Image (cartoon, rainbow, N blue to C red; front, side, top):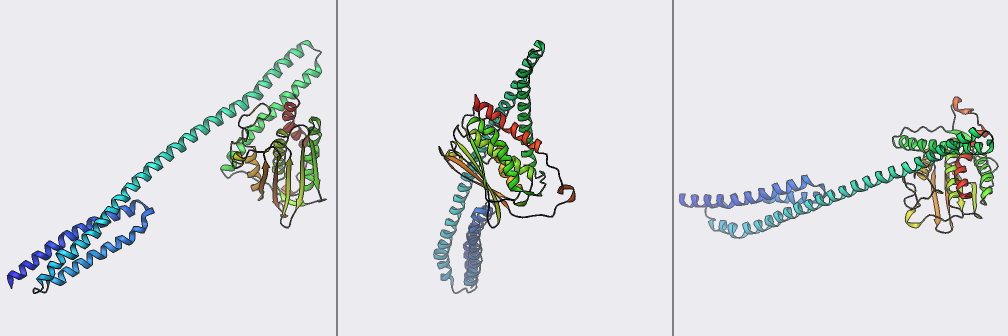
Length: 385
């Protein structure tokens, strides 16, 4: 009896030790796998199963061995149950190894993506600096040349008209430089969420009509017909009128840039149940299809090679979109290469309670006329060449 007890105990120990060792190895491997990658969280179920197998195996082995007359049953445990469990845990261990390989591949892929992202970022910075340096250099050269000519004219003393012409060039190019600087400042403030919007109740029809009719005086001189259309006599809504002016001027300047002589630009104001809409439609060259998904991104231009006629730092349409959003509106466009482009701005039809300090801000028409002239003058001069 004692001999049988010793044999059974030894066999039980020999049986359970490799099972415990093998199970713990698989369990530890799986724990590490689950912790290091949430993507394989589904393996947690297998982890629970492995614990269950381990506990049942220990319990079953000891239960068999408390009955010393069932030594033959212990042999069944050794030669049938243990191989099955070993096979299961072997597959489990193999799964862990495969998962490690997958994780390694994912890490390598992530490193490659990070390198590519860094390369594109460096390329973007390089292109932006190249572009901005060109755009700043051009007006500065014009200003320098104009001042040199002014010096000559003043020395001669009888070239007043030519002097005034070059003074106007200086004014236009100084305005361009200031606009570039303000645009970059605006981009930074918008990205930092510190850009301030001043909503006031204004007649959107009057604002759009005034800008369009003033701009048409300049576009007509180069053979581009600029037309204003609306069925609304008046529409008071809450807007930042300064931003709306900048939005419309940017869209108009783009339309003028890419519309040839004999073409037309139609500005229309119309309303629906919830919004007041402003559309700017031209018969220009249109936007290439491959560029249409990029035009509202920062520092993006949809001309692959920018000539002197189409200068810019690539923030115009980005700012247009953000200014529209700051007025709680939306902007969409339809463009067909060779046929033209139509932008539509939708602003909420609403009136707000204004602060007294913002309610009666004076509007100076002469200032707007001058801003429109400066915005379009450079484009018109280049088209007239």
